[in-house]
Image 1 (cartoon, one colour):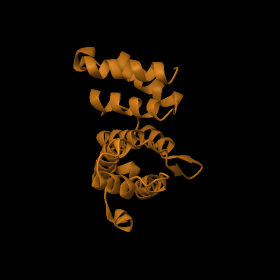
Image 2 (cartoon, rainbow, N blue to C red; image 1 turned 90 degrees about the vertical axis):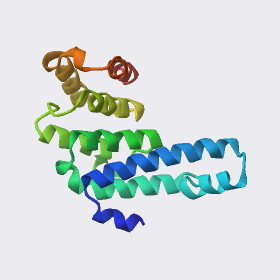
Image 3 (cartoon, rainbow, N blue to C red; image 1 turned 180 degrees about the vertical axis):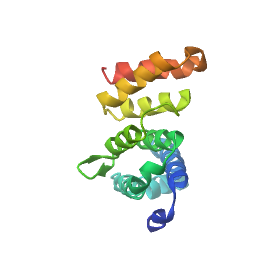
Length: 171
């Protein structure tokens, strides 16, 4: 249940968010086709006809995750942001959004040095897809990629996702 999320740790929260986002995306795609009755039931159960269930679920995940953000690892940050972007939900948190909280937690950890190339590309993809242009985060990712990394450690896909993210975010 949603109340059970309060007992989850950082890894479980980010994995749950990512799994639910993927399920919701699949249910949404099935619901758009309206092929069978069970697909419609599945769609309505997870997404809801007015999207309130999806928003409530991700708001609950965000509320449970925020206190643990200092304990998240790089993949946890990128999975959580990526999940929200896939689900097309921007949970509110305090005076801002979960994305603001994620960026602040990353900065509090002194940067992106522990982020693998895939996590770097996922985090900027998530922010760009959610239409959140956090200039400080994008600047830090650019510095990390240009100044501190060997570009050969990035796959062509990771580099293309990073370039796409900057273009989409108009940075």
